Length: 283
Image (tube, rainbow, N blue to C red):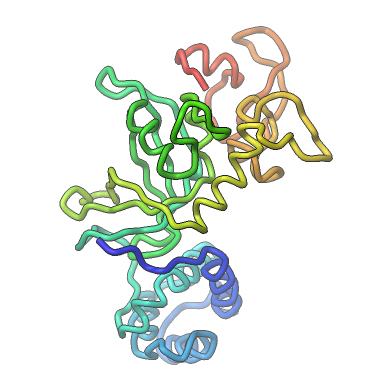
């Protein structure tokens, strides 16, 4: 499987550009002349290599539906992450199954410690940044040993004395990027991969996060915290170095009978510390 050129910055810029076109049609029913109008406006916003017909066939799939803001945002991302396919006159359709092996750039949005068949490890929540599953979120379990092996590929130190030590801290994978080598034979219900790789730009971006998380550099102002990133209540909605999505909220926990932090993304009635202790979870 070959690795295609990838620029997250360019994809996100195009996603924003395409969304600006599509948001003008939110709440409208996509049919007839509207399909042609959207096609023309999107085609004008795309590189000259893109085929108009590929855009038309992509939009035509929405015929008869009412475009929502969420649909527009996801479609904009899917188009932005598949300019190469549009330039080969291939429509960009929603992912239903993997028809061929593919190397897909992904970002790890969340990591959940878990145990599978007596094997301890982590469940990665990945977001495809480009390719056929672009904009889709999917999960992949990795054992503790697999996590250690992957860590050496995507930016952690490869030896025991390097500055970016993995140390078994699975939460440090959050927001790191890599190429997932998707296996079509195993990807029936969702993309499945076991091998990962990175480009030099991905490695650079990953290490910019790890140098703070591993305290090669201190926590930057205005926070300048002394505690570790995995024990910080602030989410990456406020801090780029955070290891969970949303900032924790403080409230009373009945389990430990104290005021503590709760994860707004976790439906558990227990605070973060009790939840981890209850599941015997290490960071």
